Length: 224
Length: 224
Image 1 (tube, rainbow over the protein chains, first blue to last red):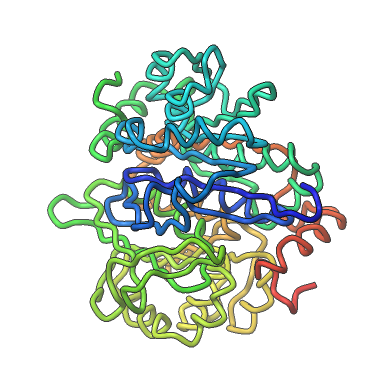
Image 2 (image 1 turned 180 degrees about the horizontal axis):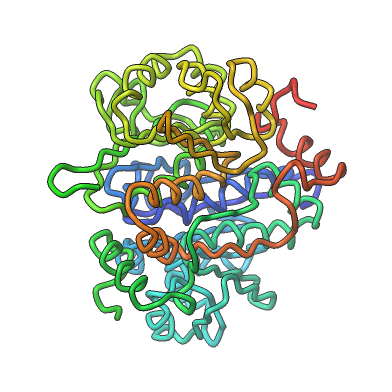
């Protein structure tokens, strides 16, 4: 983060995206010194998230926004359609000049479709790990993967975007700033219950997650 | 959560709110069986969050939505203005018939202004604890406070809303559902850095948080 010109952070929006995938990183990155935040989409019409009710309003289009220091690509059930959208070409074009191109959840599939994860180890939501393999990437069970060579950071599902963004803050600034932003967000998690990973989940929890998540598209139909 | 009629969950929106305060609980509660999610505000015009760029579109107005099983009241720098808005009267009117009325961050001040926290212990963002005291409530350093008598759950700052909502899931359903939603969101936090609470933060972290947060209204001008 240098004095003088702003640090451009672009959060990608598309129909059917998962809100927290974008909002988690946004809430962390917006406190970076000198940041200029954009919400970028194919057009300027409000984008309908996977809740079916919450709409988010973009501030820039892919045609208008031709450079960003940091790009955040969220996931969600809308990923399948976004794979065939102008977002992919935009990612391919802008990635070489970013400082960090990042994804959350199934957003990794969009980076992969843009050819950015060939042969790379990448994090994604547990339910789409095999989809990532189809694009030539190696899925991992890790929560956040920092690939310095490719200047790409990928995160696991939904809530992992908060942790991912804190890593990006550490990469761009220092440990003091990470702790300061954690304090501003009071990010000292104490959730009830257990787990939060496929590897730690007993069969009844997985079955219940599929039952609750599938109607919302959170678990793809082909996953078992 | 009973079969038959939907479980109404209303997320309150207002100008200057903090996005994650609303979106964290929304992402958890939307997986509840039979849920019907509303985004409720004074009018139907998009609400501008404290980012200054992200706008959220309401689905219902306070005049239209006259009952909700669960209400989530976010915080943010806009709280000061929301204190003098029709939201307060709406909270006073709807609270008696809710199952759980909840707040995140400085949203607790809005519950307090509606007279719902007289003599109650409540969680809020560290930077507005003394404001809460001015409304006759007792601020605590706890992350989530469940007040069964008042059917109110309050949470500390921003990210605490995710944990709060998981407690509400536990109150409305069962431990299996909590763990299933944690799995869907891959909520197994592993943030870099330290702390995330005022009590654990050394002076240099607090100073840096004030420096980064104050320009965004995340730390009120009167806090020191």
